[in-house]
Length: 213
Image (cartoon, rainbow, N blue to C red):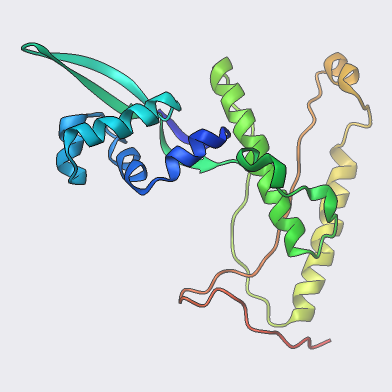
């Protein structure tokens, strides 16, 4: 079972978004049969079987074992992942394209970059799992409180300079796939983001700030 599976197929995405099937996927973090699930989700076994077949058809659940009980064969299934994330690929025709914005101060560009990260990491994780190799990745997550908008702007400027300096120091100037194969180098994606943290109450929009510049 994967920790996170990124869903790229539109039909699979649609199947996973059904509330009943979402509940079934949650319950199938541990193997279970249609009979066991029927008790947990409060539905007839036949109805649960219908949803299980749809999830299995889209590769979201997998067969663990079959148990013989008299003349009946009970199928025990499990979710293919502990968590699921729908990739922008599932909405390819309307997915955000980072090239449309290219403005480091744009919240829309940040969102487009995040969408691209989900898309690319989903493919990389799937490829690494198929090749049975470990995927090299690195991330930092934290929070910082700024006294003023000017402090925030100064931080962003210094961060940009520091990151640029590191890129200049470690970037291999060779370009192209042939160069990568010859040198053993591997191109990596670098994304650095800074955005307001969500408030703990129901209000999700940051209050209008007054610049102290």
